Image 1 (cartoon, rainbow, N blue to C red):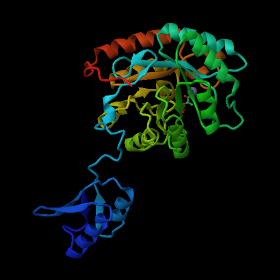
Image 2: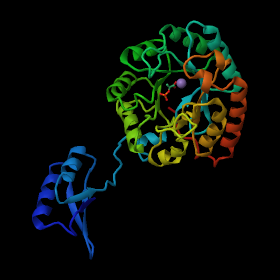
Image 3: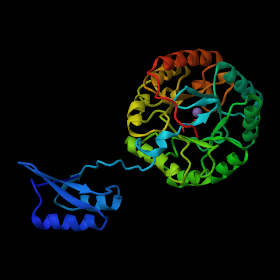
Image 4: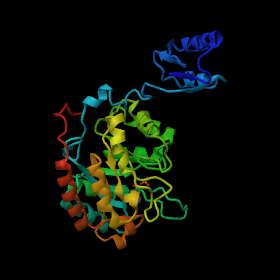
Length: 352
Ligand code: PEP
Ligand code: MN
């Protein structure tokens, strides 16, 4: 919809606009009100170049888009008819809980193995463990490829599918070779379009692999978040999970600004499951249970929670953020009870 600055376009302006949209296969339908006119773009109005050229015309106030900018991630896309199964549950039916350490300590693998068994016991469906870590300080521990084997072994022993972050092509290839079924794209890379494309391309034919896409720390609109997922899905694999994890600037006292409340807004726009990360949102173990329950109340399909058998002996975020397995078990019990109170989901649809 084109809104001109003046109450209506002059005949010359209308002709210019009509010619411009015709280059993109569209037509103009004027809608004449008594006070002002607006001009509908009839056709596929998603072409960025067309919109940019229209917005560049000096007599145009703005363009309001009616069509969704995403083709595949849109709620009305055919992909909305599929459901993903992960960790023994069907997303959209049961609550998915991913839990485990922020960071695997390659010098103390015992902790990760104990944590893996403990989170399983607590009721988690999948096991997270950071092998490579994005760190603000270049001298801080950056992760270690040796942790990949620790993750793989813990996953094998517990039967919980592994989740780990990849930041570059080398990590991606190593993680896929190791059979990691859930690749995390972290908050710092959520807008790294080259990485999104590499991941999308690498998993195109691999319906056994999913991507947990975090919301960027500085991400503005929800469309920006969903469009990042569209980059991955456009290669052909629809197994993407959207993960709000808090944004900057943080709320005084919390590490970030908790954003679980965007869950219903995401669900109005897209079919993708929403898996909230309360650990990075609030950044302190004591606040994680409340944030988890808030996320479930808002309609989240799952949670990803940092947990450690001995947080004080953890590295990365674990000393401050990780909940103990006992706290995790109680949190999961309450979260599942709350989830069960929510309106029943529509009847089961085919699984992927
Ligand atoms: C993490 O999961 O440990 C992590 C670094 O996440 P984020 O990208 O959300 O900061
Ligand atoms: Mn972390």
